[in-house]
Image (cartoon, rainbow, N blue to C red; front, top):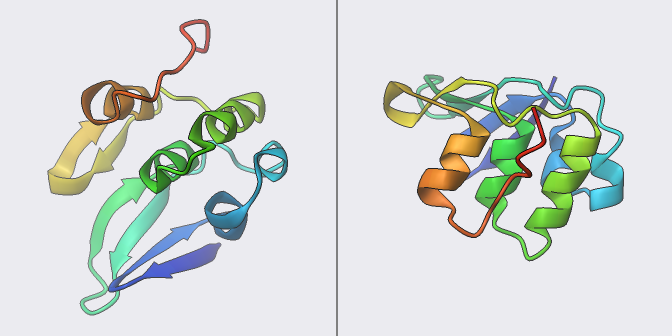
Length: 111
């Protein structure tokens, strides 16, 4: 399991470097597109929430976010996997997009 650090948080998830820095083409080949990782507070070691590759890409808000999401979907990512997000809220990538990221849309024929 790889980790990615951002201020006082780190993300523990497989293929974190590709998810964080990879091109859309590289994202098509990640080994576990439905991995559920953990966001950890580095000061307290407390688990803050769970995260998936799709949620990580959505949170990046990069200009090629739609292309990256399409690549993850091609790799087999499921936008309807439920995770425990911040404040113990149960959510999926699709619901997160619908609720908080109005510019991100998942094809309706996906899962």
